[in-house]
Image 1: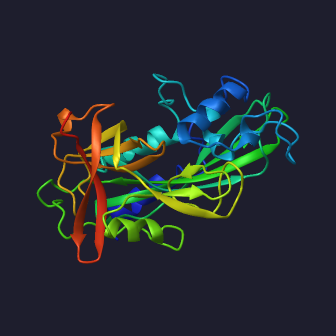
Image 2: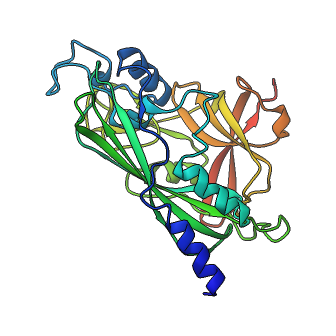
Length: 311
């Protein structure tokens, strides 16, 4: 490492321990309406979050732990403090050519469940800055932040460590991906699904006790807590529930731009996939689609979705 590089990294590490911004208190206390919105959005039907009459060890409604960060998020249009530690650190990295950013890791720890009426405040600081690293996206520095949430009594209710990569993007030509599409993670819980796809079937997990359908696959029913299940074969028909068009960074096995969509199957569950057979500009929420099985290689077939002939 040259003297100039050593001086630069020492200057960056001078930000470690600085607050990202002033402590931020949630605009509203924890409330049942927002909990219900969250559960609707993610498809969580656990009654302990939404049904006051449901008997549980919590003796009343509690908020899903994964909502922790949502309570104190800045409202739309509200920018971070320009004098905060992260803004100043990122400005230094930008000036040095590390102009792009991507999130890489997030670890959360929950101390207790939040209940309606709790008012939380978050404090966040810079926890670490790495030496320059060579990555597939380009050379860059990893930046760690630590956030701590406290309730109205000042007691810690949760913590988060978040890591970002601030990198100098490679040229588009140099970054053109090569190779084949990466295989998805497969385990005992998802094996039936991928075995079905290999046979040209879109299988949906069904609870043997209450009949509830669920996807992605998991060992326990979210409605009745049964561990017994079987499967039903989906018609493969549905519609685009939500979508994004991915432009950058390029990913091996994909030609940008491409559509990543949440498909609402007619059986009532949703599945994340790609929409093919249409330009990204032709995709819209509500677009009728039909599953299309595509072999990636000799050992992997994936379910993709095409617009139906009627659409």
